[in-house]
Length: 224
Image (cartoon, rainbow, N blue to C red):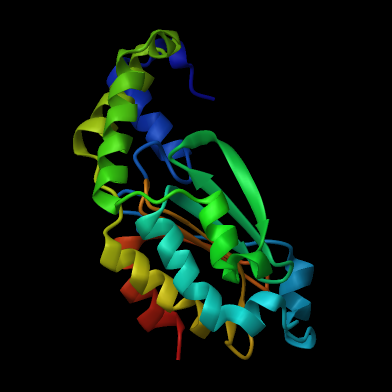
């Protein structure tokens, strides 16, 4: 077991970044894809379990443009979609510490969307994210962090870029294809425009965590 007392701040930074599956600075260039195996019993019975057609499946052609709207034109920066249970979780730039949960079928209502999700241009949302990071770095909160974690936060802030609008569309446009796979189909999905990370969990209980820059490669290698 490593004794942290004998590590300098540079070594501690590297250790922290290596230990997290998705670190404070996201996935690095050496780990653009990470696979996590789940319950082996689910893998073994995956072929015997028929795909349940949920409300999201039936309404997906109407809901997919809504997902794009939430991420590109409204305050949402993190989105989770539970295909089997119609659960949609959202995190908003207007209240970043809290997560909201919505029934997917409600999202096809324009009135519902306008009541719950404020409009904001994508470039303005990005600017506010930079301001929030900057404010945190200057706040008393960061005084509680040891030096190696402060260094990670500063480096993250300096080089941070959000997921591009075209990348968001590319990922969302592929969901129906992955959901309709005949064998190992998509069960739930999450996307973070802040970290440029996509998480895909399939019915075999396997999970793929992918940097958006490697998403095309993942699709080419894994989808027919």
